[in-house]
Image (cartoon, rainbow, N blue to C red; front, side, top):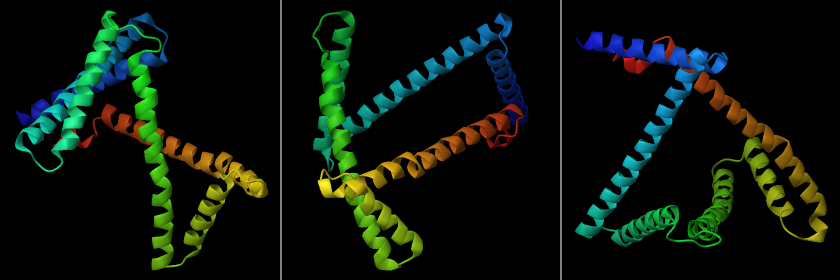
Length: 210
């Protein structure tokens, strides 16, 4: 019975996957309309999953607050912030709260972006400490190259006139090697996604065999 259920699940997934694939590739209403419908279902499912995750997050932190566990103050801040954003968003959607710019936009730009910038600034100290530990354990060519590139990038970002040549080198590093590495990572993600999709379409995904 379990094997039959696995076979049926595989057949359903392959059928819907092939139908969606051809609906996206072929400009035929007979296939395109069901494909768009399936994509909308996926979007709705993802949205519901996110909502469930948020409620689970709130449940966990509310339990931590009620038990006065270590760090419950941070949990209290998280719960209050989440509920406040929910309430403000609902009030804006129904037209009760009308400001220009919107309150949620202000929160996004003035709070979240500021926090993300601070975390990005901490990345600098993480890189410096990582370079120090790398050279402390074992000096290698790759370690020296990493430290040299890090120093050039950091020095080139300083607004000092006599470091203008380093600024040019920094711009070249960001435009060529860093950009190439980022594109390589994106290509790797795309290829991995394609391979995973092919494995699902041909029924070779591991979850179907268990």
